[in-house]
Length: 463
Image (tube, rainbow, N blue to C red):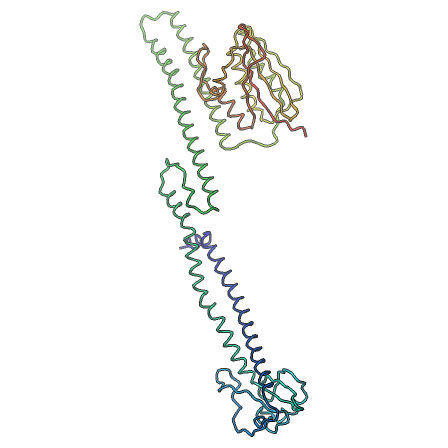
C-alpha cells in the first residue's frame, strides 16, 4: 500500500494534474470574488440611479408626498424575510417621515444633510437616501439597505453560480486531457516492457509529443550505439577465438609428436624450440587481447582524467631501451629529434602503450639496416604532431583505414602478428581525443619508395 502513494507523488501526470487543478481553482475563486464584487457594486449603482430618477420625476407639490399612510413599513432587517420592497418618497417637512422611517429624530437629522446620496441610519434600520431640492422643496427618496443588499447579492450570485458549476467540469476535462496527453508515453512504456533483451530496434517518434521527442531520439541513439557495441563485441570474440584456436591447435599437434617412438634428440630439441615460439606468440596475443579489452572498457566508461600530462622524453628513453634489442637484431638505426620539455595531455600508461605498439610495428615491418625516425612538429593552432617514420614498405592508401580494425593484417608480408596493435592505438587515441594520421614517410627504402609515417596530433595548452 505504501508504494502507491509514492508512485502518485513521483508521477509527472499526477503532478501536472494537481498543479493545474490548484491553479484553475485558484483562478476561478479569484474570478468569482471579482465578479461578485463587480456585480454587487453595479447593482448598487443601478439602484442609486433609480432613486435619483424617481426623485427627478416627482412633483414637489404632489399630494402623494404628503399623504397619511398607515402601512406598516417596519419589516424585519433580514434579507430572507423581507416583504415586497417599497421605495419611500417624501418631502423633508412631511409630518409622516419620522413614522415612515421609524425614528422620531429622522427629519431633524435628514435636514442637516446636503443634496445627494447618503447612507442614513435610524434607530433600528439602515437606509440609502437621495435628497433633491426642487422648487424650494427638498425631496427625499429612500430605500432600505437590507433590501438593496438582497437585490445586489442575488444579482452577484447569478454571475458567480455558473463559474462554480463549471469548475468541476473543468477539473474533469483537465484530467481527461492530461491522461490523453500521456497516453503515448504510457503506450511506449508498455512497448518497452514487452520487449526482450535482444530487441534494440528504434522507437517510433512520429506519434509522440514534441517535448518527449528529443528523449526518444536520444534513447534510439543509445539503442543504436548499444547494438553496434554488441556487434563489435561479437566480432571481436569471434576473431579472438579464431586467433587463439590456431596456435593452440599447433601446440597440441607439436606436443603430440613427443609420443612418436622414433623421434630423435635433435628433432626433440627442434620441437621444443617450436613449442616455445608458439607459447611466446600465444602470450603476446593474449597480452594484446587484454590491452584491447582494457582500452575499450575505458572508452565505454569515459575514464579519462582531467589535467593529466606526461613528459615525453623520459618515457621515450625507457621505451627505446626496452625495444632496442629488437632493433639491434635487424641492425636498424633509431633516431630521436624531440625537445626535452614537451609534455603531452595523456596518461603515461596509455602513452607508453600507444608508442610501444607503433614502434614495435615500425621495427617489425622495417627491413634490416633500415631507419626509424621520431620527431615532433608544432603549428600555430597549438597542435603538436608526434611523427614516427620508417623506410619500410609502407601501407597502401586503400588499406590505411582498414589497418585500425581488430585482427586486420596486410597480406604479402612474412611477419607474424595478431592485427591488434594499431586497433589498440586507435582506441586509446579516440579515448584521449588524439587524432592519428597515416602518411608517406620522408624516408625512402631500397626501392626508393616512401615508407610509413604515423602522426599523433595532440592539442597543447600553453597556459
